[in-house]
Length: 259
Length: 348
Ligand SMILES: Cc1cc2nc3c(=O)[nH]c(=O)nc-3n(C[C@H](O)[C@H](O)[C@H](O)COP(=O)(O)OP(=O)(O)OC[C@H]3O[C@@H](n4cnc5c(N)ncnc54)[C@H](O)[C@@H]3O)c2cc1C
Ligand SMILES: Nc1ncnc2c1ncn2[C@@H]1O[C@H](COP(=O)(O)O)[C@@H](O)[C@H]1O
Image 1: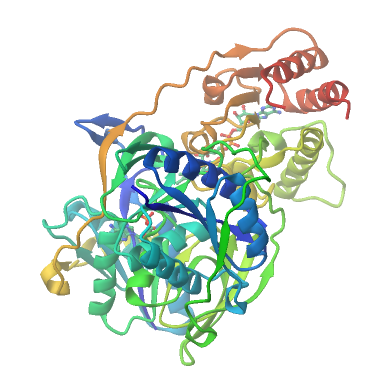
Image 2 (image 1 turned 45 degrees about the vertical axis):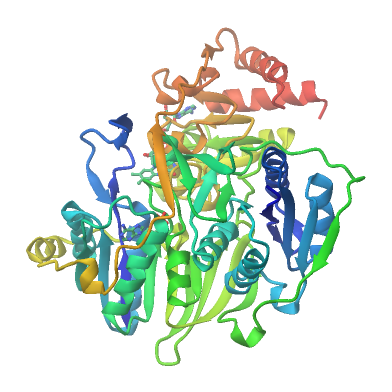
């Protein structure tokens, strides 16, 4: 099987965010692979281990985004590609999706394009479905489990995590997946993997290599701000027995009108 | 301008997501400002009835499709039909409530229409026909204004961020039936069936959420049954007694039960309960955090709750900074006492 997995580099989830010069600033917090994309890599590797084949990790970003690819390589991906082009300034999700769809075509013969659920910086969660639509492939999003996959017959049955539980869907390959957390915890990079990744040559593709011009962004973000400070007047409830404290709290909650 | 605003009515097997009506309300308000009309779009089971309800909540008209191929939600036939309708009617905007279905449907429809998507919006201003949306980014640590320059402007609205309109059963409007846009043979997927997930909870639209963290297992006074010998299993057993106690309080308040990631990862409760950056983002009227320290990733999922209550043994726990009411104490004592106090007061 030929699998492409898409990863993004993002500020660590513990980063304290501020706005500097109108842009998000994460201070000295590290940049890491998007946590949801680790699940996507895990799913890709499990499938390759089971059915044979190779996994290519792909990212769109600056030179620094290679670190996310190295994490994917260290987890066990066979190769990685960085897509970087100065013409891609402030790309929105649709622009990224057009680039990723072109990358899938260039990789040629991809059976599965696997995405994370959502990027934790932009919190959009739409790139997988957009890419599927551009490719004309079925979008099997929020995959929580793969019940069956037959690379020869090109059939797949997945469980999708939805609000109401699971939707079990039969689809055909090639397809786009996004992976939900229920899939299972991603592996840690092995020591050998980290060594291999640190030596890996990561090719850089420009848009010309993909045979496309810079896709037009439809959406822009004219202003980024820190959320208004929440005015919480803290009140600690103290004194007396647990029953007395609980009674005070109960009265206050009823007075708040939230029950 | 006499344009239209489309509202996609999200439902599961004919039962509407309550947030769909919030979106109808938001669209009604925008339509007033823009001189536009509101068209509800309902596909699949029970579409006729849901269309009427949408009209009661503020839609001017509705388009429905009840073809057999649309009975189960699938993104391909739904997106294809939605974009076909949008091409015919050229709406200024298509609004959805944020859900697993809407995110992908919005994404695919936008690609078909060569437009963009603004997901999970918490506020919309109309500036002369151009919508200026506000949405949280970086798990709500920052806010971003976002505009879509192309048409239609495709937005999904965060659940509970827009008020629910009043239902007016006197309102009426035309309902137009439309045929499916894809034949069954053209649809690349089939829905085999559905499965319920253990511990499934409707956290998203709950007005009250009570969450337990790692602290729920800290009840040394409880002795696990003798057959449990493994330390880890003992811990889980203790936590489950803690969550049972939380369940009783939840029962009194009609609340949903949430959890921290630590509680989920330790196996106390299933992932469906997790609140936070890699769980659910919630914004209830009341959020009670029990034995949760308040890590930044947890706060990301609940910080916009109206009233936050924290119970924690550690007076320095960061959760107290966000809490309207804090109690420094043992949840094993406070929770049963609170259940009792509220039962009395709410006459349950
Ligand atoms: C990429 C990433 C994503 C993450 N996503 C999430 C997420 O979505 N949601 C999430 O919650 N976390 C998330 N986390 C984890 C987060 O960083 C914390 O580890 C987690 O929230 C801690 O859970 P906790 O508060 O239950 O446990 P702890 O931090 O261990 O806190 C337990 C608390 O219980 C108190 N306590 C103990 N016993 C009692 C008692 N008897 N009575 C009262 N209080 C008691 C203690 O004082 C302590 O404050 C994420 C982390 C990463 C790296
Ligand atoms: N710049 C990027 N490069 C590679 N993959 C990306 C990029 N942005 C998003 N993705 C993929 O799309 C998924 C969803 O992202 P988003 O729609 O931005 O929330 C991510 O989890 C990644 O798998």
